[in-house]
Image 1 (cartoon, rainbow, N blue to C red):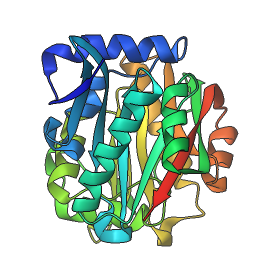
Image 2: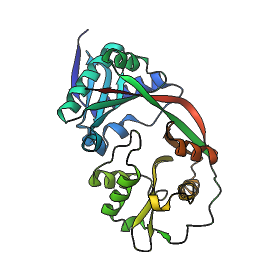
Image 3: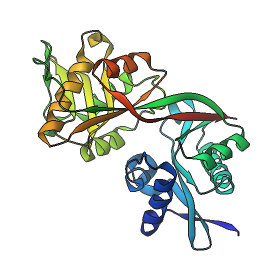
Length: 286
C-alpha cells in the first residue's frame, strides 16, 4: 500500500504515541507532543507524518540548531512502523537538513526501534556512541549552601543574553547538544520546572552555572571553566533534587552520553543508576 506524507497533524498524535509506546514498552518516554511541537522544531513546522491509507506509519522531526556551529543536524523523534516507512522518513529528513546547510545527520535509536535501525543501516549510517538513561530515587542530601562568591538569580530577573552565553560556553563540544538560539532557550526555560531550575551568578553579575529541569528530568547542567573542580555541578543537582522533592516528585532522571566520562562519574557518585536500555546514536555525512 502506497505511503503518503502530511504535515504534523495534532489530532493524529494519539495514534502516533500508541505506535511508539508499543515499540518501546516497557520503557516508555515522555509524550511526542512535547518534542514535535517544541521551539527546536519550529513548533511542529519542522516535522512530518507518514501514512498508509488512514493508518499512521510514523513521523520525523528535525533540529537544525547545530548547523551553524558544526554542520550537524538531528532527526528526532523519528518513529517508523516498519523499515519501508523508516527509509522514506530518512530520505525526507536528509533532504530537509541538507537544504538547510547540514553536512551530517544524527539519529538516536532506542531498544525496540528495530525498523528505524534497519532503515539507518540501509541508508549507510554508522554507530557513534550510546546514551545512558539514569534515574535516582529522592531525596538526595541537601548541600550546606552555595560556594562563596555565587548567588542564585531569581527566575523573573534572568538576563537571557547572559544565560545564553553561559549555556553556549558550557555546552560547546558536548555530544548531541546543539546550542539553541537565545529566543528558543528562553522559551524552553520558561516552559520547564521554574522552581527546580537554577541560575548562579558571581559578585559581578556574570552567570557562571545553571541547571535546567523539565518535570523531573535534568535537561542540562552547565558550569563555566573558572568554577569547575569545586563540586558545583553536584551542588546544582542536590539543590534541584530538594525542589523536586518539595513538589512531591519521587525520582530524578537524566540522559547522559556514555562517552562523557565526567558526567557518567558524577551521576554514579550521586547514586544514579541506569533504568532502561541505552540508546545508540548513528550518523551519516555527505
